[in-house]
Length: 204
Image 1 (cartoon, rainbow, N blue to C red):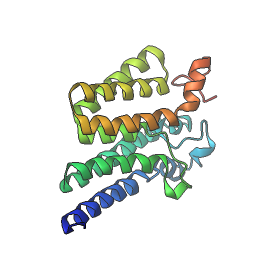
Image 2 (cartoon, rainbow, N blue to C red):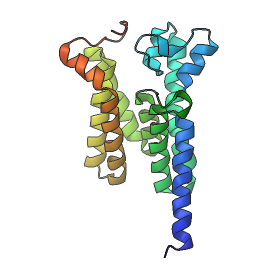
Image 3 (spheres, one colour):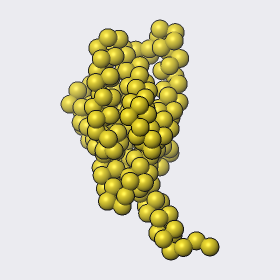
């Protein structure tokens, strides 16, 4: 028979997951482009709601703001849930990432999750978040492929967390990285064929 403590723990876990999901599901890219009179970002370029596609809509400032807000919602979810404990913080991070990928407001068709991934990582263990950004910048500078930069940085983050024995975090980010790779399946295909658009080019 379950004890009251078990029920309290389960309730906190569900609350943290829901909190993260609701924050993560806010489609800032879509909201900002509409407010700026740029139309529906889902009908531009790749059709994605993230910062890279907002940049294709023609506004560097909105793209930067989208990147910041998509990351911030992941960090905020983790920090808010951390008051309930480590496990709720991890679940809130998972919820935020899932919310961005599958927002209920957009029929569960969301973004690819890179910025929110970074935000969750910064909130849970900021050195790994800084390492992600460093790897992203190095690969982006060398190749000018945003997708390859994100995939490489996410894999490196999991490796870093595992090497430093942050096991709960490495398990969480292994899951998030698998989801990230799945969401980038089309990009991976284009990279393999040499058809992926580089940073600054229009989406193909």
